[in-house]
Image 1 (cartoon, each protein chain N blue to C red):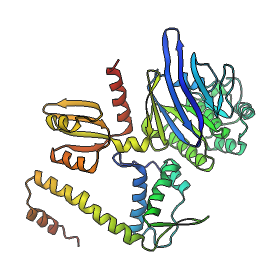
Image 2: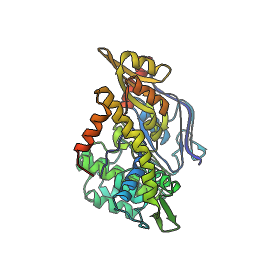
Image 3: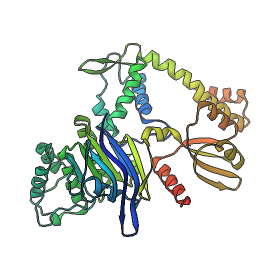
Length: 122
Length: 292
């Protein structure tokens, strides 16, 4: 499958995010094995070195751990680590952008809060 | 890592035309490279010299540490030409057998598997093959050769989208299991963007730029804003393309942009997006033209 990667970010980061998404949505659970570097490379048609870099990123953060000769597995604290990291980014990336755009449109904080309330999600 | 190929100050002319000019290029072991350039940029001339098909007027080419002299065939190298030199009257099977003789690491099980995958009849004569089938046969030889330096010149010429995807997939799979140095020469850049680690851009016979694909991805940006804001922000940065429309401007920038700079860009009302590799290449080459 040819996946369109986003041009503004390194592919290894996007690979790491895909694994993170799969852990957050429960596709991978604690101690599940994730697909191998070679499978990643061929499935997403990326250079194996890129796949290795993406996986290494998550190993460094403690999201994945390595079992010698077997492969990569999801750490017990994986979900917690990812959530913490993404919550910080949520503020930097999404909230700040939202406020910048709201400024341009002359929307007040109250307007935004009202809009969020109207969307009866939670 | 040691170099599998080193070209140092290589020159080659045909009559008055300088096809390759003071060219330096170094490829490491076990890496996939892309060689990008427009038609006539000097790609095929360079590849011909690397594969021993022609000899530089001056400069040095070293393959796996040993210098290539006129008439030498480089060791453990496989060059899949854009226009192959197969004999038209030979059958597919005979062509594969012929190729197997020249390559020490030749893998028959892979060759046979790929002939099946690409649905090529072994008894067919070369001249009966379509352009796409001919490309595929060349690619099968390139892959099955398992040569420590394998060069593909426009490997997907004449292939439909499905076959192109299949070829790249097989290439990656085989490379993951049997690492070696692969050089993909093409002008279809976006297709190889995810496959290669590092690219060389050749223009007017010289290497214009070489860098890791991921670095290019991080450092190339498309910016949009007012003329004034763009001018202010891009001052001192490497701008590879700029276009004004009314009081607005577009600029393609190839430079590091840090977090703080992003914040100040936002304050100036500038939007920053990623730049697809194909566009990056086109802008870079156009910039080179202005200098001439």
